[in-house]
Amino acid sequence: MNASKVFYTNLRCENGDSRLDKLERLLRQAGIGSIDFKNKFTAIKIHFGEPGNLSFLRPNYAATVVQLVKELGGRPFLTDCNTLYVGGRKHALDHLESAYRNGFMPYATGCHILIADGLKGTDEVLVPVEGEYVKEAKVGRALMDADILISLSHFKGHEGTGFGGALKNVGMGGGSRAGKMEMHCDGKPQVDQGMCIGCGNCVDICAHDAPHITDGLSWIDHDKCVGCGRCIGVCPTDAISNDDSSSNDKLNCKISEYALAICQGRPHFHINLVIEVSPNCDCHSENDLAIVPDVGFFASFDPVALDQACVDAVNRMPIIPSSKLGEKESCHHDHLMDNHPYTNWKIGLEHAQKLGLGTTKYTLVEVK
Image (cartoon, rainbow, N blue to C red; front, side, top):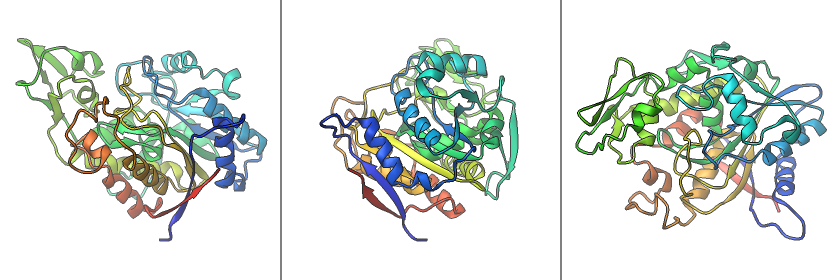
């Protein structure tokens, strides 16, 4: 497979040339205008940010994409699917309220929001896909009803997949609640009670009543656990880990298969903003200090090449000494693997390439 083009712009802004101006130039030079948008419903897949987390993408960036799609004749809407876990986005009413509180009002972004899998996360389409693990992806209906897909992703670390970029935004983010459960179901976390302090964070975050505190220590009922891994992310002492060393690999592969199901058969275009690279997902109700300095904006028609380019760019950056990653003893020369050592981000990209969704080979084109 030939190398794909990934377009990049840095964050230097002078003489009234704003980041939003640079983002628009990036998208135009990356070729978004070659898509026939005329009167086409265009889903802009984004994460609206969990309440309390401030590392999500500002609505200003979404507004720039929306305006450009409108200029090209499209009918854009912002969208995401509901979550598995307790929080501000578990059903559509809370999800919309969280989005509005984080600034994604229609008059700020220029378009409306549709929660793709409906009120309770059950409005889904079964999408056939030739995957190794998934044969019928469960995808939010509004996302599949769109004629064109654009992903607008905040690139960051992730405790289950190593990083979150275009593939995760589309694949995991596009799955209905049942789809998310299917992607997460291979691994069940366990507690090292020698490290547990009985804080109860795992109990508070679980939507399925799986973790319990007995005699001051946590344990997890695997009959109730769906393997979403939220408890791993909130444990302050790293006492919780996955009991299946291969489960994160399977998770990455399933995400790639869901991304294929969602992208196949229609135009798709992908944007990653590598800024405020937090160690964990924006699904947390907090965000820790970024692990590396801000890098820039990236865009491509190929989500695999795009994510690979962003990984490489992050790994070229110095570690912020006072960050979570800066406190660790790095040994892989790989910031994302050092950030979450039980993950292997390469698996998802390699699997996506095997599926034909894209290639890890890329040519980086800088946009001034």
